[in-house]
Image 1 (tube, rainbow, N blue to C red):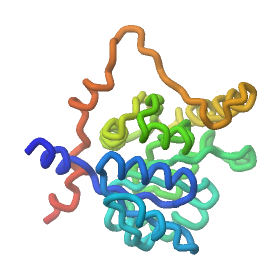
Image 2: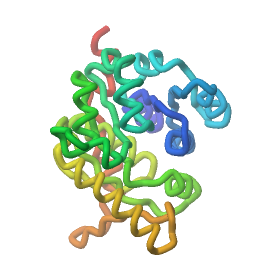
Image 3: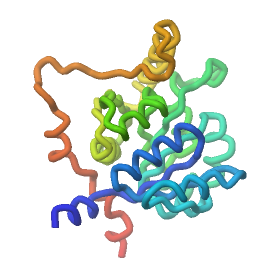
Length: 243
């Protein structure tokens, strides 16, 4: 009964992009018992990945956008803006879009925005954008699926309900979550990703380096968070409410 109740609270998930990061996210979702729709590129990457991930279904990009309530964009900022958004931004109206991208210096040159997430929000004006998972490498996610230490995932967004929804999913996957505030603060999260990359390079650790927030005033919020945080109804039960 408890498992059924937990599943009923879980939003329908979609992952767009089946490269290294998209594959790691999909595998972690499958490891956590969360079914997911996958959309890949022209080389049938989604079909190959879906055949190895429990509960995964490969589908065209538009179908994933229509079926999922929370879509994770595991694509570069340029691809998300120029190729993905024009095709599915209307399908994602009223839904949660998670941005994993880290901008190259040229991406923000001449832009009025300080972060990739803010720039992406212009291309999904009817969606709730949440910055998350850009500070965790694909390698770290694969290590987590096999019992490795859980890194902290800072998230940012302007919609509290959307952040609660993303937090719920990340906690289900065993990650630690830190709310970094509004979407504008994504620039600091993206800067942290660059810092970790540099530390990994200088320390010779590569992409094995990770970030963990130490909360000195609390013993452990992870387990309490799993019990307390549930996604907002308008994202979890969007279609059912309209019936």
